[in-house]
Length: 367
View 1 (cartoon, helix red, strand yellow):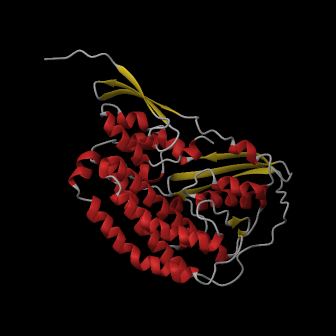
View 2: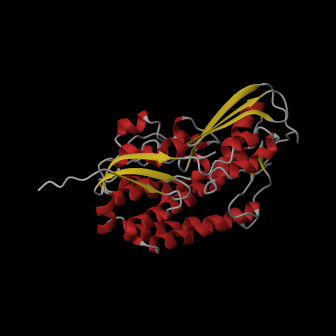
View 3: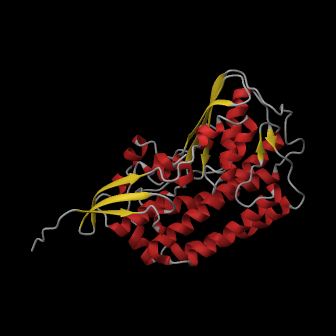
């Protein structure tokens, strides 16, 4: 017997714990089935891009930390690369190697949080979440060694770094490289063939390859759909062209594939860090750059493979000490545009799993 139901519009968020911050999903339901969904942004708007235009180039670096506070090192990197391109600043080779080490450590830390919180959305409660935060803390300890901070690092500078690595840093990194493969195997024992994980994520939130490309998705969201695209390979920066690593991809583009891509990317990041620490050259870690930098008139765009995808920075100079225009191309915002297509026809519980598998940080969405 067919039961006639009226469409019901419900709000999820902006304070719902599974919306990962100040984000709202306006869903229209037929029973439990999603027939329409509107992502609603704007609750965390802080005007960072406008603030940056009122500060000197160097003063903007701490603002980039706050764009994606789970990946602060990556945000530092894309901004300094843009300004270095704009001003023609050279970076010592040692500093470039250390930047790669920091970027890959940041990728691991971010992916651990992404997988842990996603597993929590699946209903695993806190076991995988706490396991992964255990290893994330080890990486945060490393960042604290070099910057004195555990969340917002402000470590990179135009022409290099704020200072060199402390003596205890490399031994601690090598210790991490030794133990992390065992921990990754432990995660796989928990999740890879767990029947609840498989039932709740395989075939859920499918993003077809063509749609992923047309929507300009990037990062694990794009690679989970089978597209082998990584900025570190197609447009290398910071000497990535000298490092050997693979690009993991998925098959069907579902939530499970996105989880698997992130886990494999952690293994590749460990491989990159191992190469960068073994070949770390001696020398300076910063070029001489004026305190009040005045790049020549012009514009520059840089982009990197951040943990969430292609993170871009566009800077325009009018010859003064402040950026005339500052804009961020945030992967979280672009990847979110696919959400409606990914959840149509699913049930409301599946929307939570799908949304978590995208892995966003609202601070870079609502700039």
